Image (tube, rainbow, N blue to C red; front, side, top):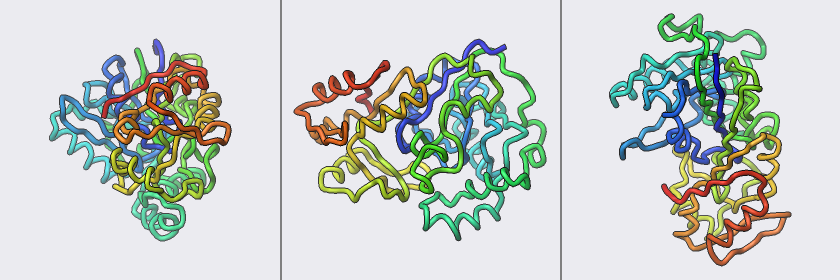
Length: 318
């Protein structure tokens, strides 16, 4: 029986530091689960000073937790085994990893179609994610049950506490984002229920954002970088964990953050990378469509606290 479920998801355009927060929390749960997307995402975190990057497998594997890839995820078999080999060599018990039999399989044809039709036009990662979801919707897809050995498939029910990891974010969600410059899955917390639990079991929704906005790939909403945002991008090492693509940077849009918090039901907000603004000594955000300037980080944080109606945890560590 499930005791409670907590969910981590992104409130912006991805790359908010969800992996770092998940790594902090994962040790306190019986299960850590991924509920959307495929290997087009990347979570980066550090364990005892050792850098770990995962793309599909939940961070719980690094803490000896049962790590579930859910039915609303898509799996590239070759990428999956490359990632399990990588984690096994780092000393983690990959036998804890299980895949929902209903997850769908990314094929070489999906990847080729993505490269030819969508990578340049929409700025996708060319991982075949969108075409795979399209075949799922057409009911012509291949499920994990048809490909993976039974040892990899999840055939048990939850028993205890569950942490759910989201990939991408609110403003990349296929229903909420700047369509068609969006991902192909549902990123909001309600999508986590596809793992097999009632929304009544949800205790906390941890929404993750940064003290400035970033976006990898193509999106007309993001302007070209100016001198100040270029400095933020450089200091923040703003490159995608999966593709290595440089991210575009904008000042934090508090209006969009407020909307994402309200719609998602976020009750605990983590705001990462405050240290980057301190290094740059530049403190700006948009609110009510006006660009506000602050003299210091304390003034900016106090302004955010007064505008946001939930618990806020500011992070000033890498």
